[in-house]
Image 1 (spheres, one colour):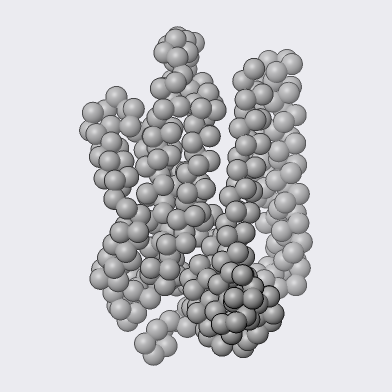
Image 2 (cartoon, rainbow, N blue to C red):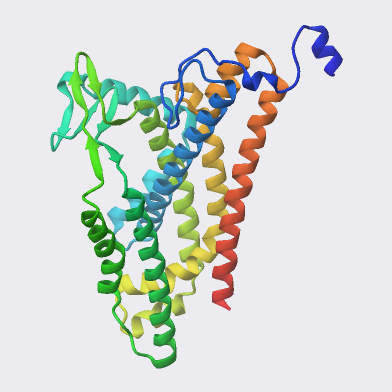
Length: 351
């Protein structure tokens, strides 16, 4: 195979990664310019893929949980609206949804000079959402260290009082301790160090905003489409999990004096999630893989910039596609590993 490739004048190996890319990328979270290497393009595409996948997973989980519970609501209208949402978005191809939301955003949103404003700091127009960009100064790292330390202490404190409740039956409200550790302590350190954080605000200059940070219409459309599409499947998984909980347990929870909300939170959902997590894992994997459809609207994720632009320039399809497949395989295995550990922990607790 290699001899056939070389006979056609196509180079082999991974030397192309050190060559200059020669093109610009619209969105990047690490330093990049047209003089950067193709390896840098790979990193930019990988980070953009991870970001849009993570955002999609978070919002799909939230929407899916709400819609899944609403699907079983005693309120006829809410249950029918939830069912209609699922049937509508589940049965339309995700690529069409991405194209629809992207074109709708371009049609509906105003030009930069007529931007929607929020507190004179956030601006929304057809170029995207422009927000203040945080700029850290010397000493801010200690605020982060204290914040992480506060979160760890909060978890340990919560575990201690949970064990105390199991052993003695005495329940302790830890809200004030949690606020002190997670909010009060970092804020105190922040002001003691002289407020080592400032913001760069976007300002309108010429035909567009300069400064600050922005989210492009491509990113927003892709994240929105992935979230609402995947949420339909997560909602059905949640519904199936809730229906798997025996009716006797629900009635027992209400007989103990728990409200509907407490019954759902303390009795039904913990059991339902054990059933729902395996199919939800599949949906997280599908969402990550579906992010490769971003090439249709020009979002700068891995397939678009690395398996697209770089491949067209250097022509080394075997190496580039292998690297791209390896990335998606690794991401999928990591997601599966993390959620399988979570699923195992929840199963152990249920014995």
